[in-house]
Length: 113
Image (cartoon, rainbow, N blue to C red; front, side):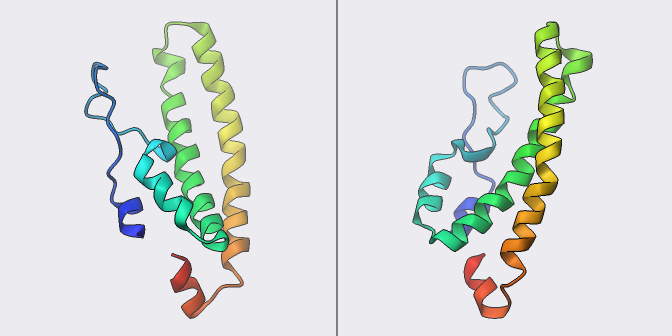
């Protein structure tokens, strides 16, 4: 089950110039959502929170392009808000993951990931 979530296979964005070969990240992959729905609650929590860090970092990485490249000030302003809010969420998410995983050792952890 986890192989399908970590395989890197994500949907493409057809019909959009330069976007056809770029994967859409995150929870938009329907097979990933189907896999997540099957997880027991404790495993879902760890997987969900673990996926949120790269999700937020991806938003930050994209938003850093806007100040120099966007044509509209509204986009530049939104990008700055995204950078601030997503940056502020990464550390708390990482702490939650550590808190969820810390009590788990050995076979229990192996069953969660």
